Length: 484
Image 1 (cartoon, rainbow, N blue to C red):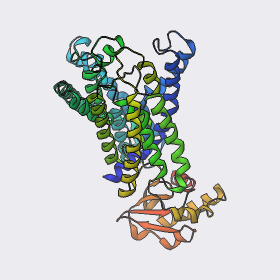
Image 2 (cartoon, helix red, strand yellow; image 1 turned 90 degrees about the vertical axis):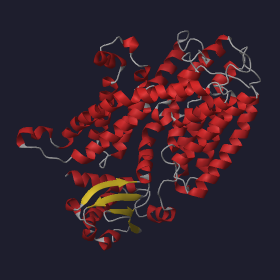
Image 3 (cartoon, helix red, strand yellow; image 1 turned 45 degrees about the horizontal axis):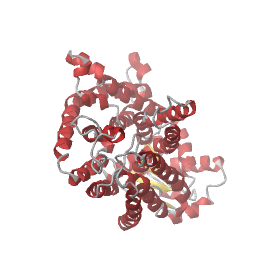
Image 4 (spheres, rainbow, N blue to C red; image 1 turned 135 degrees about the vertical axis):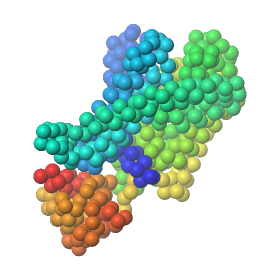
């Protein structure tokens, strides 16, 4: 199960990698025109819309990325099926469609369906699409239906599966959503403790998209709190209004960037540059704009226990800020841009204490993340399964280009038993990960003769061939062989 979750985390790396740039574009645009969001400045409008074209479609990116990464051949038809899955569910469960199904006015539809296009549904769509691809991509139908065989069958089966998933969500989603709204309303009377609980569950629910239910209670006017609206309008109580926003600033501006630094420092040497390219951009996006998805999704599924720690620290931050009545607010998110803008407002109360709190949280995040990562060998970015010494030894063996990769791939594939024995081919940073029908049919001596430094049999039907940092090229060549 944990291996599956970590594979899901690796699959999210491709869509996550594009998010920091989009967040920074939006942050700059919002900095230029914070009140009009582009309506008063063409340059701001251009930057905000360019960034939002990606940020607003995170669920679609996740659907495509997960389907591609979780499918056994990483084939384009799997990615297309992920998109199909997402479109089926979000269309069937959209407010207008639900209104038709229930025979009511769209305004009377449960507000939960207005939040159905979230990251959780995107991830579920990608997982279902990958399962359908792995199951049906090689199925041959009778001659009369032969056109729909194989990969053409995958999006059809995916659409059918998501109809069933949508039917389940039709009943389950509004119950869970409304339950969280009720929960949020009940804890809103607990003062600083309630703010802390809200912060904890806000982060914990990010992967499911259900954090919107809690946000509607505390940030908007569902339960009469309207923390964001009242703070910016100056209608409220100084030191109280803004209590459900202020505690996010120390985490987003300081805590998460420090966590990124800890993950970089604990990354394996050969992967530090790759980890740095993601974590540096994600850390800056979190600090400057308050957009945390690039950082959070980088370790959310790779190290779920670490994400729970992050959620707990977020709750602690909101509790502390609320306890001492330090307040600030945001119109976009809890980053540097909104901190500067909100610190001038009448209801901002000792906002610069949040900077001090943030510096303390940066230290806590850094050392706690570093300790937990190394103590429990958590698979954060740059620490995915990889043998460093093997990577160094094989770096020379695979540097001669694609021709050598093709020869090595052919010999390895033959040693595995070829088409008759190989079920699936995947790879991580240095290893081929293979599933075979019969382990006895694998000729390990033949595989080792290619110059690979090692073979690791991890189950009755699973084997890993350690190639090195050029493993992607060998894997690509094997995929070519399988398609012939």
